[in-house]
Image (cartoon, rainbow, N blue to C red; front, side):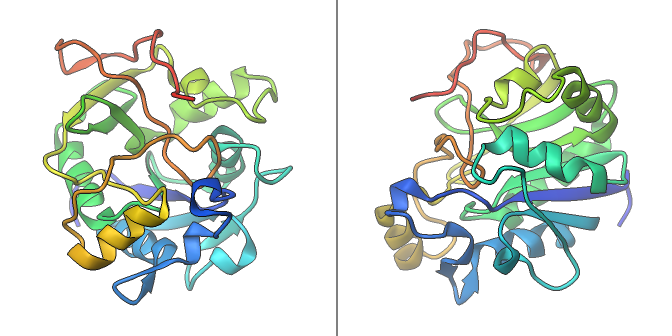
Length: 233
């Protein structure tokens, strides 16, 4: 596959609070575990090395499995645990509970052809929210950012890492960025197949769900991350 080399990080270590404590990584859609669907999508997009952050049973063939320490301390801590294993210039960052990870990865991979000096590319849902766990980022930039936080990672929002980072926001049509947060989301996904009208990537505050920004007014598609973005409670 042509284009820049990429690796991938799949976050699969959340508590699944809105799923009644069920481990979302091993929920099945179309006969496959959600985490395996995300891994396969990353591999299909050309990721050479794939790191899954979560419990050992979330691993699958050909991936590196790591865990944030301590567990369940959020997506920023999970990302920091994965970064030492990333080698490529660019890194896909995915939540394991995406309904259509193949569509997410294909769109992000296509956008890399036009990458210039931005620090990352993220998909924006129909409600105008940037989906930070449906993005591709320059690995070196994220490492520098993590190092600058001096270990203050546990339970910290991704906003702390991404504020001020030059990101290109790309509109994703329909339910490309839909995820599975609650039992009803899974039911709709099972009933409708991959193309379901599921709520997009709400923040769960743990390592297995997406963290989103609030809608921004229309502006230049290549811009610094808005420091006023906040994670919903």
